[in-house]
Length: 156
Image 1 (tube, rainbow, N blue to C red):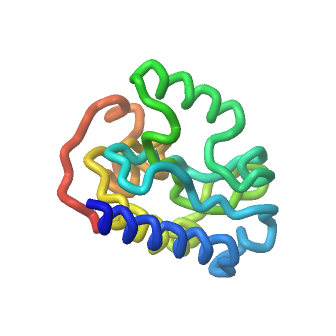
Image 2: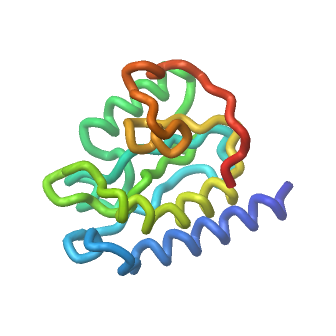
């Protein structure tokens, strides 16, 4: 168990280091800080949002603005803390003006997210927003499947 945890820590640190200097899309040119993600390396629950906002870009951490405060409240209601889960986004840099991430930006970050999912191997992935939801349910409408648990085969 310790060895698996050490492998996960090393892989997550490697991904974070690569994300922080990533030049793969236009978002790299406008970011203050990349936001690789954070949390427990063997979390049973992984939360995946759309992309960093202004506060996240300034701090280099996911979900630290108003959405983060709300997320912390929801986690507390579930008996969890941020340290119990892993939190990341489909894109690792803030889209200018908090616009929606573009398909090429999502594609550029996809290998990083794939590696994070593989390293953590969570039991549950919670998608936070339509772009993270679309990764597993392309063509679905968030208003139609919001709040419904779905069992899917491993993606990675």
